[in-house]
Length: 147
Image (tube, rainbow, N blue to C red; front, top):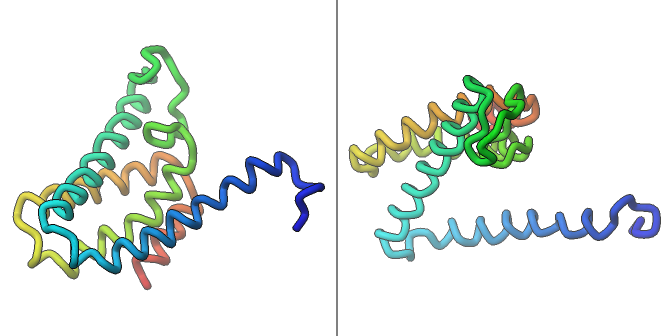
């Protein structure tokens, strides 16, 4: 509606894709029980491992000040996982209530190795959320978990 007065109007318009990710994600999760079980397990494991690797990278950088991706010194005082952007903190803040819900309400359906992987990922995600110092992400995690 305010195309002519927007600063970087093309860039702002392209951000609408994130809403599509959410809508398509809801549709995908709605039909999750129709997916082959091995795909669900693989997707779950990849997501948990991605959280662990991303936060490990940020913690290593925070403790040493060395960026493994760029192979140089970097400022890790307020870090956002592999991307270095606060988007990580907001994303983890929205994902953590889901992970915590899976941990408490679906733990009987998970095998022991997936439960251990989930517990480690939750611990790393909380650590990552704290390291990013993203107040909005922390508030969304708290409100989402309580709800």
